Amino acid sequence: MESSEAARLDREFLALGVSCNLSLFPTSPLTPIISPMRNFLIDTDTASDDAVALIMALRYDDVRVEAITVVSGNVPVDQGLKNALYTTELCGADVPVYRGEAGPLKREAEYAQYYHGEDGLGDQGYPDPKGSAQPHHAVDAMIDTVRRFPGLTLVTLGPLTNVALAVQRDPETMATVGRCVVMGGAACTVGNVSPAAEFNIWVDPDAAKIVFDSAIPIEMVGWELSRHEANILAQDIEDIRAIDTPLAHFAIDCNDTVLKANLNETAGAGISLPDPVAMAIALDPTICTRKSAHFVDIETSSELTRGMTVVDQINVAGRDRNHAAWGKKVLSGRKTTVCWELDVAAFKSLLRKSLT
Ligand SMILES: [Ca+2]
Image 1 (cartoon, rainbow, N blue to C red):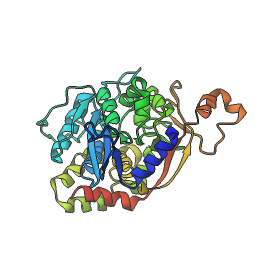
Image 2: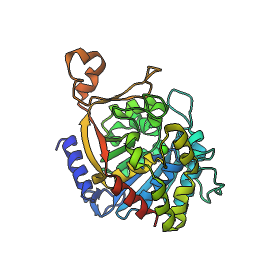
Image 3: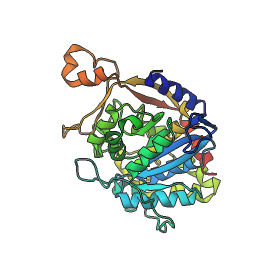
């Protein structure tokens, strides 16, 4: 069977909520163990919306989070590590957390503490986590986890530095990822860190290009899906507060600086939650109500459009006149699934359910 065909069948299988894992210690080396659980690996620059996304995955019925890998992004990597550990402990989850790269492949680290708070969790004075990171590097852990759970779902919530290094080190293993849901980019629309680019891709465009050029089957969830009515508005905040659990209050409290910054920065009311939107689509693919596959390339050299996710929306990249810029991508045949529309009510419902 062609590997792409196998990957397609695996993805369809996963969409049915069933995964086929090769255990480290199977009863027979050739007998796959059918598990009712879907295996997730989450790469995160853990700040406030990442924390909410982690809760959603950790509390979802048929999903087992096998590993959390942390990368520099919204906050420095050690702060993100603390936040990821704190969030898993809030959920009572026993998931290994790994420290990854402290900055982009070729550029200086850039953070978004003006948006998420100095500690990334709204500066609420949360205590340090009780646990600590695993001794192995996140990139090693990522490759090892993908190897152990072929067909797993990789969800990326931060810059793609860790994933790019894993692709460079072991492209064959990384190509066995079943789905890769990327929170990142802005498909044919404005950016949030520059007019052209969204933060995760802008921070490390070189890494994003490596990942988008790879054989990993990417579903791109741009930040525009988390705008406007997808914001957690005053009534949504009231509904979540009314759940009255520690997780519900945490989800709102840790986004306190986001609530204020969102209003100042984009004149948008409410809390913007890009990572939970992407996680919702990873957990329940039907929450993305319109998607299509396109060639997508990442701008790495221009200062004006650094980190722009250029989507061949109307399929013109293959024309002769575009050969210099797009020929290599078109020849590779590697398209990205772009998510265009969100079932907002289903997203918010899933979010509330995870906080009960
Ligand atoms: Ca994030």
